Image (cartoon, rainbow, N blue to C red):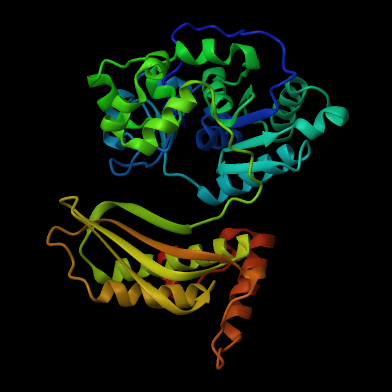
Length: 405
């Protein structure tokens, strides 16, 4: 769900020459919310907000009916409920979203082997080598959108440009459910009229600094002295943003994107003061992390926990493993040990998270313990197979059975 500023000019045609525009950015529209609508067609046309059914947590996705009332990604659910009280609020089903994400990426991969998935709902594609087989970049973009809509019933927006950064901005301005081509010769004109916050790399903090400097558009940023920008933002950021403002972005589409970590965290409906309940969540989160590691062919070298109190004070703790693992039992053991060393916040725990860090590909090889018991790995892989065949709720860890009743 993108909150990037859009083109106030509302111009949707910048030319039709796509001879030098080999980069596509595919961005699913309101992905989580649209998946929920796909599962429950009665939600069509309604304001749907994913992120929580109570007043805790934050918005992760919202339909345009809700966005029209001011709902945005990252907004507290309580605020979203005040803005859009008639909306349908859904806690979220992340296993379902991952399944649809895999299907989306499979469709995109039909058109080019050069696909860089950057999140669960967006990817870059280099189609330079696909022209002879599939046609022009514009035709490929149309076919990708058509197949995603036809096979999955989901809307997708696509930006087409000569660089990754411009393609990403173009897809944002193609929303909802649209396509926008920025010919190479139109790049500067397109960029320089946009709000500076639309530029890839300008966040909330840097945006405020630039605004205080009187820089409101990308064009103004492009014309600003780099030396002055360096004093404001630092030399590296200044030169990078200055290049992007002039459409200079040599970064290629990278097929293999190194994963740094996988994790699961939850903002609880009520602040928790019971260690047993938190340990139960740790077990569940650890096994979810492990399942995702095995699914991606990764093992982790480090386990971390995150605990946030009712007063929003937050601590993180991590521990290096004796040997890399993708087992929920091992991740849970370390996470529980980290948790056991901490004192519960006096007002209770608002949020807790478990994360597997320092990932390495299993195929690369890694050290193992000489006396390693292979039975837990066999058991967890068997659970993966059962869930894959019968669904996520088909089998559970014994200690979680009470929670699942």
